[in-house]
Image 1 (tube, rainbow, N blue to C red):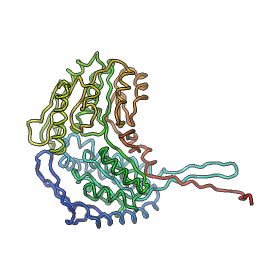
Image 2 (cartoon, rainbow, N blue to C red):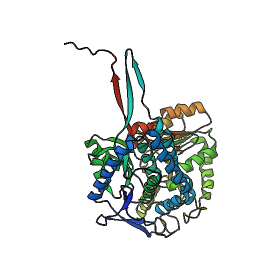
Image 3 (spheres, rainbow, N blue to C red):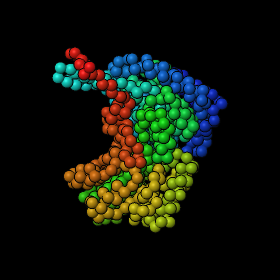
Length: 485
Protein backbone atom coordinates (compact mmCIF):
# COMPACT_ATOMS: atom_id res chain seq x y z
CA UNK A 1 0.00 0.00 0.00
CA UNK A 2 2.99 2.32 -0.41
CA UNK A 3 1.89 5.29 -2.48
CA UNK A 4 2.64 8.99 -2.45
CA UNK A 5 -0.23 11.14 -1.22
CA UNK A 6 1.73 14.38 -1.35
CA UNK A 7 -0.65 17.37 -1.61
CA UNK A 8 0.28 20.45 -3.67
CA UNK A 9 1.27 22.21 -0.42
CA UNK A 10 0.86 21.81 3.33
CA UNK A 11 -1.82 24.45 3.94
CA UNK A 12 -4.95 25.80 2.29
CA UNK A 13 -5.35 29.50 3.07
CA UNK A 14 -7.50 32.17 1.44
CA UNK A 15 -8.71 29.85 -1.29
CA UNK A 16 -5.37 28.39 -2.38
CA UNK A 17 -2.58 26.04 -1.39
CA UNK A 18 0.25 27.70 0.52
CA UNK A 19 3.66 26.42 1.58
CA UNK A 20 6.38 27.62 3.92
CA UNK A 21 9.18 25.13 4.39
CA UNK A 22 10.43 27.11 7.38
CA UNK A 23 7.81 25.29 9.43
CA UNK A 24 8.75 22.12 11.28
CA UNK A 25 8.54 19.07 8.97
CA UNK A 26 5.63 16.67 9.45
CA UNK A 27 6.21 13.16 8.10
CA UNK A 28 2.97 11.36 7.21
CA UNK A 29 3.60 7.66 7.85
CA UNK A 30 1.54 4.75 6.53
CA UNK A 31 0.41 2.60 9.48
CA UNK A 32 0.49 -0.39 7.14
CA UNK A 33 3.93 -0.16 5.55
CA UNK A 34 5.71 2.31 7.79
CA UNK A 35 6.69 4.26 4.69
CA UNK A 36 6.47 8.02 4.41
CA UNK A 37 3.56 8.82 2.09
CA UNK A 38 3.75 12.61 2.34
CA UNK A 39 5.82 15.34 3.98
CA UNK A 40 4.24 18.55 5.17
CA UNK A 41 5.35 21.52 7.24
CA UNK A 42 3.81 23.06 10.33
CA UNK A 43 2.33 26.51 9.96
CA UNK A 44 4.63 29.36 10.85
CA UNK A 45 3.31 32.33 12.86
CA UNK A 46 3.07 34.29 9.60
CA UNK A 47 0.86 31.63 8.02
CA UNK A 48 -1.35 31.40 11.11
CA UNK A 49 -1.82 35.16 10.93
CA UNK A 50 -2.57 34.94 7.22
CA UNK A 51 -5.22 32.27 7.80
CA UNK A 52 -6.93 34.24 10.56
CA UNK A 53 -6.89 37.44 8.52
CA UNK A 54 -8.41 35.61 5.53
CA UNK A 55 -11.08 34.04 7.76
CA UNK A 56 -11.93 37.39 9.35
CA UNK A 57 -12.40 39.02 5.97
CA UNK A 58 -14.37 36.12 4.47
CA UNK A 59 -16.65 35.86 7.48
CA UNK A 60 -17.95 39.40 7.00
CA UNK A 61 -18.91 38.64 3.40
CA UNK A 62 -20.36 35.22 4.26
CA UNK A 63 -22.47 36.45 7.18
CA UNK A 64 -24.03 39.11 4.96
CA UNK A 65 -25.36 36.44 2.60
CA UNK A 66 -28.77 34.92 3.11
CA UNK A 67 -29.10 31.58 4.84
CA UNK A 68 -30.51 30.22 1.61
CA UNK A 69 -27.36 31.19 -0.30
CA UNK A 70 -25.07 29.75 2.37
CA UNK A 71 -27.08 26.54 2.38
CA UNK A 72 -26.83 26.24 -1.38
CA UNK A 73 -23.01 26.29 -1.19
CA UNK A 74 -22.95 23.63 1.52
CA UNK A 75 -25.35 21.36 -0.35
CA UNK A 76 -23.29 21.73 -3.51
CA UNK A 77 -20.18 20.77 -1.54
CA UNK A 78 -22.02 17.67 -0.28
CA UNK A 79 -22.83 16.68 -3.85
CA UNK A 80 -19.18 17.06 -4.90
CA UNK A 81 -18.01 15.06 -1.90
CA UNK A 82 -20.39 12.22 -2.71
CA UNK A 83 -19.30 12.21 -6.35
CA UNK A 84 -15.68 11.84 -5.19
CA UNK A 85 -16.39 9.50 -2.33
CA UNK A 86 -14.17 6.71 -3.59
CA UNK A 87 -11.12 8.90 -4.17
CA UNK A 88 -11.59 10.55 -0.77
CA UNK A 89 -12.05 7.15 0.86
CA UNK A 90 -8.86 5.80 -0.71
CA UNK A 91 -6.96 8.84 0.57
CA UNK A 92 -8.43 8.40 4.04
CA UNK A 93 -7.48 4.73 4.04
CA UNK A 94 -3.92 5.52 3.02
CA UNK A 95 -3.64 8.16 5.73
CA UNK A 96 -5.35 6.34 8.62
CA UNK A 97 -4.99 2.66 7.73
CA UNK A 98 -8.73 2.11 8.15
CA UNK A 99 -10.16 -0.48 5.73
CA UNK A 100 -11.53 0.91 2.49
CA UNK A 101 -14.61 -1.22 3.19
CA UNK A 102 -15.16 1.10 6.16
CA UNK A 103 -14.08 4.49 4.80
CA UNK A 104 -16.35 4.11 1.77
CA UNK A 105 -19.40 4.30 4.06
CA UNK A 106 -18.29 6.02 7.26
CA UNK A 107 -15.93 8.91 6.55
CA UNK A 108 -16.41 11.23 3.58
CA UNK A 109 -19.98 9.95 3.32
CA UNK A 110 -20.67 11.14 6.87
CA UNK A 111 -19.00 14.45 6.05
CA UNK A 112 -21.28 14.87 3.05
CA UNK A 113 -24.30 14.10 5.24
CA UNK A 114 -23.26 16.92 7.59
CA UNK A 115 -22.82 19.43 4.77
CA UNK A 116 -26.18 18.47 3.32
CA UNK A 117 -27.99 18.51 6.66
CA UNK A 118 -26.76 21.90 7.80
CA UNK A 119 -27.01 23.28 4.28
CA UNK A 120 -30.67 22.29 4.29
CA UNK A 121 -31.49 24.11 7.51
CA UNK A 122 -29.36 27.24 6.97
CA UNK A 123 -32.29 29.20 5.55
CA UNK A 124 -34.42 28.42 8.60
CA UNK A 125 -32.10 29.83 11.25
CA UNK A 126 -34.59 32.38 12.50
CA UNK A 127 -35.33 33.93 15.88
CA UNK A 128 -38.64 34.24 17.71
CA UNK A 129 -41.31 36.90 18.28
CA UNK A 130 -42.14 37.64 21.92
CA UNK A 131 -45.41 39.57 22.53
CA UNK A 132 -45.24 41.86 25.58
CA UNK A 133 -48.67 43.43 25.72
CA UNK A 134 -48.42 46.72 23.87
CA UNK A 135 -44.73 46.25 23.15
CA UNK A 136 -42.93 43.25 21.72
CA UNK A 137 -39.46 41.76 21.43
CA UNK A 138 -37.75 39.53 18.95
CA UNK A 139 -34.54 37.57 18.76
CA UNK A 140 -32.03 37.33 15.96
CA UNK A 141 -29.61 34.41 15.60
CA UNK A 142 -26.17 35.73 14.69
CA UNK A 143 -22.84 34.06 13.88
CA UNK A 144 -20.02 34.05 16.42
CA UNK A 145 -17.31 35.10 13.96
CA UNK A 146 -14.10 33.18 13.28
CA UNK A 147 -14.13 29.63 14.67
CA UNK A 148 -11.17 27.30 15.14
CA UNK A 149 -11.58 23.55 14.66
CA UNK A 150 -8.98 21.12 15.99
CA UNK A 151 -9.34 17.59 14.71
CA UNK A 152 -8.37 14.09 15.84
CA UNK A 153 -6.66 11.42 13.80
CA UNK A 154 -9.32 8.72 13.81
CA UNK A 155 -11.98 10.36 11.58
CA UNK A 156 -10.17 13.19 9.80
CA UNK A 157 -12.58 14.31 7.08
CA UNK A 158 -15.67 13.46 9.10
CA UNK A 159 -14.52 15.58 12.04
CA UNK A 160 -13.56 18.46 9.75
CA UNK A 161 -17.01 18.33 8.14
CA UNK A 162 -18.88 17.94 11.44
CA UNK A 163 -17.24 21.15 12.64
CA UNK A 164 -17.31 23.12 9.40
CA UNK A 165 -20.89 22.41 8.34
CA UNK A 166 -22.77 23.94 11.30
CA UNK A 167 -20.19 26.71 11.67
CA UNK A 168 -20.56 27.82 8.05
CA UNK A 169 -24.34 27.36 8.04
CA UNK A 170 -24.55 29.90 10.87
CA UNK A 171 -22.42 32.44 9.00
CA UNK A 172 -19.06 31.83 10.64
CA UNK A 173 -15.66 31.24 9.06
CA UNK A 174 -13.27 28.51 10.20
CA UNK A 175 -9.58 27.82 10.51
CA UNK A 176 -9.13 24.07 10.89
CA UNK A 177 -6.06 22.27 12.21
CA UNK A 178 -6.10 18.53 11.48
CA UNK A 179 -4.17 16.06 13.56
CA UNK A 180 -0.55 16.04 12.46
CA UNK A 181 -0.89 12.25 12.13
CA UNK A 182 -3.69 12.40 9.52
CA UNK A 183 -3.42 15.80 7.84
CA UNK A 184 -4.39 15.06 4.24
CA UNK A 185 -8.14 14.84 3.72
CA UNK A 186 -9.07 18.19 5.33
CA UNK A 187 -7.20 19.84 2.46
CA UNK A 188 -9.58 18.13 0.05
CA UNK A 189 -12.57 19.48 1.99
CA UNK A 190 -11.14 22.98 1.63
CA UNK A 191 -10.77 22.47 -2.12
CA UNK A 192 -14.34 21.21 -2.42
CA UNK A 193 -15.82 24.16 -0.54
CA UNK A 194 -14.10 26.63 -2.87
CA UNK A 195 -15.33 24.66 -5.88
CA UNK A 196 -18.85 24.76 -4.43
CA UNK A 197 -18.79 28.56 -4.26
CA UNK A 198 -17.54 29.41 -0.79
CA UNK A 199 -15.58 32.66 -0.67
CA UNK A 200 -11.80 32.42 -0.40
CA UNK A 201 -10.76 32.37 3.24
CA UNK A 202 -14.01 30.93 4.58
CA UNK A 203 -12.50 27.53 5.41
CA UNK A 204 -8.74 27.40 5.88
CA UNK A 205 -6.55 24.44 6.81
CA UNK A 206 -3.28 24.90 8.67
CA UNK A 207 -1.05 22.04 9.72
CA UNK A 208 0.91 21.62 12.91
CA UNK A 209 1.26 20.21 16.37
CA UNK A 210 0.34 21.61 19.78
CA UNK A 211 1.95 25.04 19.36
CA UNK A 212 -0.16 25.75 16.28
CA UNK A 213 -3.33 24.75 18.10
CA UNK A 214 -2.34 26.92 21.04
CA UNK A 215 -1.68 29.92 18.81
CA UNK A 216 -5.10 29.54 17.19
CA UNK A 217 -6.89 29.00 20.51
CA UNK A 218 -5.48 32.15 22.10
CA UNK A 219 -5.75 34.59 19.20
CA UNK A 220 -8.04 37.54 19.88
CA UNK A 221 -9.64 37.22 16.45
CA UNK A 222 -11.08 33.80 17.34
CA UNK A 223 -14.56 33.61 18.85
CA UNK A 224 -14.93 29.84 19.25
CA UNK A 225 -12.74 26.75 19.58
CA UNK A 226 -14.06 23.26 18.87
CA UNK A 227 -11.78 20.36 19.76
CA UNK A 228 -12.01 16.63 19.25
CA UNK A 229 -9.24 14.93 21.19
CA UNK A 230 -8.01 13.51 24.48
CA UNK A 231 -8.86 14.77 27.94
CA UNK A 232 -5.32 16.15 28.57
CA UNK A 233 -5.41 18.04 25.27
CA UNK A 234 -8.90 19.26 26.07
CA UNK A 235 -7.78 20.69 29.40
CA UNK A 236 -4.95 22.62 27.73
CA UNK A 237 -7.10 23.98 24.92
CA UNK A 238 -9.98 24.84 27.27
CA UNK A 239 -7.63 26.71 29.60
CA UNK A 240 -6.17 28.67 26.70
CA UNK A 241 -9.58 29.50 25.24
CA UNK A 242 -11.00 30.46 28.63
CA UNK A 243 -8.34 33.12 29.01
CA UNK A 244 -10.00 34.96 26.14
CA UNK A 245 -13.56 34.03 27.21
CA UNK A 246 -14.13 32.16 23.95
CA UNK A 247 -16.98 29.80 23.17
CA UNK A 248 -15.77 26.21 23.42
CA UNK A 249 -16.96 22.75 22.40
CA UNK A 250 -14.99 19.79 23.77
CA UNK A 251 -15.51 16.28 22.43
CA UNK A 252 -13.06 14.24 24.47
CA UNK A 253 -12.44 10.65 25.50
CA UNK A 254 -14.51 7.94 27.11
CA UNK A 255 -14.63 4.59 28.86
CA UNK A 256 -18.21 3.90 28.01
CA UNK A 257 -20.40 1.09 29.38
CA UNK A 258 -22.36 -1.30 27.18
CA UNK A 259 -24.87 -3.28 29.25
CA UNK A 260 -26.25 -6.63 28.04
CA UNK A 261 -29.19 -8.04 30.00
CA UNK A 262 -29.99 -11.75 29.91
CA UNK A 263 -33.13 -11.23 27.81
CA UNK A 264 -31.24 -9.45 25.00
CA UNK A 265 -31.04 -10.84 21.49
CA UNK A 266 -27.53 -12.21 21.85
CA UNK A 267 -26.57 -11.84 18.18
CA UNK A 268 -27.59 -8.19 18.21
CA UNK A 269 -25.77 -7.64 21.49
CA UNK A 270 -22.59 -9.17 20.10
CA UNK A 271 -22.92 -7.04 16.98
CA UNK A 272 -23.18 -3.99 19.23
CA UNK A 273 -20.13 -5.08 21.20
CA UNK A 274 -18.16 -5.57 17.97
CA UNK A 275 -19.17 -2.13 16.70
CA UNK A 276 -18.35 -0.66 20.10
CA UNK A 277 -14.89 -2.23 20.39
CA UNK A 278 -13.41 -3.31 17.07
CA UNK A 279 -14.72 -0.96 14.37
CA UNK A 280 -11.85 1.28 13.26
CA UNK A 281 -9.65 -1.17 15.19
CA UNK A 282 -11.10 0.22 18.41
CA UNK A 283 -9.99 3.79 17.74
CA UNK A 284 -13.33 5.50 18.43
CA UNK A 285 -13.89 7.81 21.40
CA UNK A 286 -17.45 6.61 22.08
CA UNK A 287 -16.54 2.92 22.17
CA UNK A 288 -18.33 0.77 24.74
CA UNK A 289 -15.18 -0.87 26.03
CA UNK A 290 -16.68 -1.92 29.38
CA UNK A 291 -19.15 -4.61 28.35
CA UNK A 292 -21.31 -5.58 31.32
CA UNK A 293 -22.93 -8.97 30.66
CA UNK A 294 -25.50 -10.43 33.02
CA UNK A 295 -24.04 -13.55 34.64
CA UNK A 296 -26.57 -16.03 33.30
CA UNK A 297 -25.53 -15.49 29.68
CA UNK A 298 -21.87 -14.54 30.09
CA UNK A 299 -20.27 -17.77 28.90
CA UNK A 300 -22.71 -18.08 26.00
CA UNK A 301 -21.93 -14.48 25.06
CA UNK A 302 -18.17 -15.08 25.19
CA UNK A 303 -18.34 -18.30 23.18
CA UNK A 304 -20.44 -16.78 20.42
CA UNK A 305 -18.36 -13.59 20.37
CA UNK A 306 -15.23 -15.69 19.88
CA UNK A 307 -16.90 -17.46 16.96
CA UNK A 308 -17.97 -14.18 15.40
CA UNK A 309 -14.44 -12.79 15.62
CA UNK A 310 -13.30 -15.55 13.27
CA UNK A 311 -14.80 -13.30 10.60
CA UNK A 312 -12.05 -10.72 11.08
CA UNK A 313 -9.98 -10.25 7.92
CA UNK A 314 -6.72 -8.33 8.28
CA UNK A 315 -4.41 -7.23 5.51
CA UNK A 316 -4.00 -4.43 2.99
CA UNK A 317 -6.77 -1.96 3.89
CA UNK A 318 -7.21 -1.05 0.22
CA UNK A 319 -8.46 -4.60 -0.38
CA UNK A 320 -12.22 -4.33 0.12
CA UNK A 321 -12.33 -7.85 1.57
CA UNK A 322 -10.32 -6.59 4.55
CA UNK A 323 -12.49 -5.48 7.48
CA UNK A 324 -9.91 -4.83 10.20
CA UNK A 325 -7.03 -2.43 9.82
CA UNK A 326 -3.92 -1.45 11.76
CA UNK A 327 -3.60 1.02 14.58
CA UNK A 328 -2.58 4.53 13.58
CA UNK A 329 1.08 4.32 14.59
CA UNK A 330 3.79 2.22 16.18
CA UNK A 331 3.47 4.27 19.36
CA UNK A 332 -0.26 3.61 19.57
CA UNK A 333 0.28 -0.09 18.89
CA UNK A 334 2.86 -0.31 21.69
CA UNK A 335 0.50 1.52 24.05
CA UNK A 336 -2.32 -0.93 23.31
CA UNK A 337 -0.03 -3.95 23.69
CA UNK A 338 1.14 -2.60 27.06
CA UNK A 339 -2.48 -2.41 28.26
CA UNK A 340 -3.01 -6.00 27.13
CA UNK A 341 -0.05 -7.07 29.24
CA UNK A 342 -1.43 -5.13 32.21
CA UNK A 343 -4.76 -6.93 31.77
CA UNK A 344 -3.00 -10.29 31.91
CA UNK A 345 -0.88 -9.28 34.91
CA UNK A 346 -3.88 -8.00 36.89
CA UNK A 347 -5.70 -11.31 36.47
CA UNK A 348 -8.23 -10.77 33.69
CA UNK A 349 -9.02 -13.94 31.72
CA UNK A 350 -7.84 -13.65 28.09
CA UNK A 351 -10.55 -15.10 25.84
CA UNK A 352 -9.10 -14.33 22.41
CA UNK A 353 -6.42 -12.21 20.77
CA UNK A 354 -3.89 -10.55 23.01
CA UNK A 355 -1.00 -10.21 20.60
CA UNK A 356 0.40 -8.22 17.75
CA UNK A 357 -0.82 -9.79 14.52
CA UNK A 358 1.71 -11.61 12.35
CA UNK A 359 1.56 -8.97 9.62
CA UNK A 360 3.58 -6.00 8.50
CA UNK A 361 2.19 -2.83 9.99
CA UNK A 362 0.65 -1.79 13.30
CA UNK A 363 -1.89 -4.62 13.59
CA UNK A 364 -3.12 -5.83 16.98
CA UNK A 365 -5.49 -8.79 17.22
CA UNK A 366 -9.05 -8.11 18.42
CA UNK A 367 -8.67 -8.87 22.12
CA UNK A 368 -11.34 -9.90 24.63
CA UNK A 369 -10.80 -10.15 28.39
CA UNK A 370 -13.38 -11.69 30.73
CA UNK A 371 -13.68 -11.74 34.52
CA UNK A 372 -12.63 -8.10 34.53
CA UNK A 373 -13.28 -6.22 37.77
CA UNK A 374 -14.12 -2.54 38.11
CA UNK A 375 -10.75 -1.56 39.56
CA UNK A 376 -8.58 -3.20 36.89
CA UNK A 377 -6.62 -0.78 34.76
CA UNK A 378 -8.23 -2.01 31.54
CA UNK A 379 -11.64 -1.17 33.04
CA UNK A 380 -10.61 2.33 34.16
CA UNK A 381 -8.41 3.84 31.48
CA UNK A 382 -9.15 4.62 27.83
CA UNK A 383 -7.03 2.29 25.69
CA UNK A 384 -8.14 3.43 22.22
CA UNK A 385 -7.49 0.10 20.61
CA UNK A 386 -9.18 -3.26 20.01
CA UNK A 387 -9.42 -4.39 23.64
CA UNK A 388 -12.79 -5.38 25.12
CA UNK A 389 -13.26 -5.80 28.86
CA UNK A 390 -16.20 -8.04 29.79
CA UNK A 391 -17.52 -7.59 33.33
CA UNK A 392 -20.19 -9.68 35.13
CA UNK A 393 -23.25 -8.26 36.82
CA UNK A 394 -26.39 -9.61 38.47
CA UNK A 395 -28.87 -6.80 39.17
CA UNK A 396 -30.04 -3.67 37.38
CA UNK A 397 -29.31 -1.28 40.23
CA UNK A 398 -25.84 -2.74 40.64
CA UNK A 399 -24.85 -2.36 36.99
CA UNK A 400 -26.13 1.22 36.79
CA UNK A 401 -23.97 2.24 39.76
CA UNK A 402 -20.92 0.48 38.36
CA UNK A 403 -21.44 1.85 34.85
CA UNK A 404 -21.51 5.39 36.24
CA UNK A 405 -18.40 4.87 38.37
CA UNK A 406 -16.01 6.61 35.95
CA UNK A 407 -14.70 10.08 35.29
CA UNK A 408 -15.99 9.81 31.72
CA UNK A 409 -19.48 10.27 30.35
CA UNK A 410 -19.37 10.23 26.57
CA UNK A 411 -21.58 7.28 25.65
CA UNK A 412 -23.49 4.24 26.91
CA UNK A 413 -25.59 1.42 25.49
CA UNK A 414 -28.20 -1.06 26.70
CA UNK A 415 -29.33 -4.31 25.09
CA UNK A 416 -32.59 -5.80 26.40
CA UNK A 417 -35.93 -7.01 25.11
CA UNK A 418 -37.68 -5.03 27.87
CA UNK A 419 -38.05 -1.50 26.53
CA UNK A 420 -39.32 -0.22 29.86
CA UNK A 421 -36.10 -1.37 31.46
CA UNK A 422 -34.09 0.01 28.57
CA UNK A 423 -35.51 3.51 29.05
CA UNK A 424 -35.26 3.24 32.83
CA UNK A 425 -31.58 2.30 32.68
CA UNK A 426 -30.64 4.79 29.97
CA UNK A 427 -32.35 7.49 32.03
CA UNK A 428 -29.96 6.82 34.91
CA UNK A 429 -26.71 6.47 32.96
CA UNK A 430 -24.51 9.56 33.13
CA UNK A 431 -23.58 9.87 29.48
CA UNK A 432 -24.27 12.35 26.71
CA UNK A 433 -24.88 9.93 23.83
CA UNK A 434 -26.70 6.66 24.38
CA UNK A 435 -28.15 3.76 22.40
CA UNK A 436 -30.81 1.12 22.98
CA UNK A 437 -30.31 -2.21 21.17
CA UNK A 438 -27.58 -0.85 18.92
CA UNK A 439 -24.27 0.97 19.34
CA UNK A 440 -22.08 3.68 17.78
CA UNK A 441 -24.59 4.90 15.20
CA UNK A 442 -24.13 8.67 14.89
CA UNK A 443 -26.43 10.20 12.25
CA UNK A 444 -25.85 13.92 11.76
CA UNK A 445 -29.45 14.63 12.74
CA UNK A 446 -28.70 13.47 16.32
CA UNK A 447 -26.61 15.56 18.74
CA UNK A 448 -23.33 13.95 19.77
CA UNK A 449 -21.23 14.76 22.81
CA UNK A 450 -20.48 13.93 26.41
CA UNK A 451 -20.68 14.95 30.05
CA UNK A 452 -18.20 14.92 32.93
CA UNK A 453 -14.60 14.54 31.69
CA UNK A 454 -15.82 13.58 28.23
CA UNK A 455 -16.48 17.20 27.41
CA UNK A 456 -19.33 19.61 26.82
CA UNK A 457 -21.16 21.17 23.94
CA UNK A 458 -22.65 19.10 21.16
CA UNK A 459 -21.88 18.34 17.56
CA UNK A 460 -24.58 17.62 14.98
CA UNK A 461 -28.33 18.07 15.26
CA UNK A 462 -29.93 21.40 16.09
CA UNK A 463 -27.75 21.53 19.21
CA UNK A 464 -24.71 22.29 17.02
CA UNK A 465 -26.48 25.41 15.75
CA UNK A 466 -26.80 26.60 19.34
CA UNK A 467 -23.05 26.17 19.80
CA UNK A 468 -22.08 28.05 16.62
CA UNK A 469 -24.43 31.02 16.97
CA UNK A 470 -25.60 33.53 19.53
CA UNK A 471 -28.92 35.25 20.14
CA UNK A 472 -29.47 38.98 20.04
CA UNK A 473 -32.63 40.17 21.82
CA UNK A 474 -34.40 43.28 20.52
CA UNK A 475 -37.08 45.05 22.61
CA UNK A 476 -39.43 47.25 20.56
CA UNK A 477 -41.40 49.93 22.40
CA UNK A 478 -44.54 51.12 20.64
CA UNK A 479 -45.51 53.82 23.13
CA UNK A 480 -43.91 56.54 25.20
CA UNK A 481 -40.91 55.78 27.36
CA UNK A 482 -41.40 56.87 30.96
CA UNK A 483 -38.76 57.64 33.60
CA UNK A 484 -39.07 58.52 37.29
CA UNK A 485 -37.47 61.95 36.78
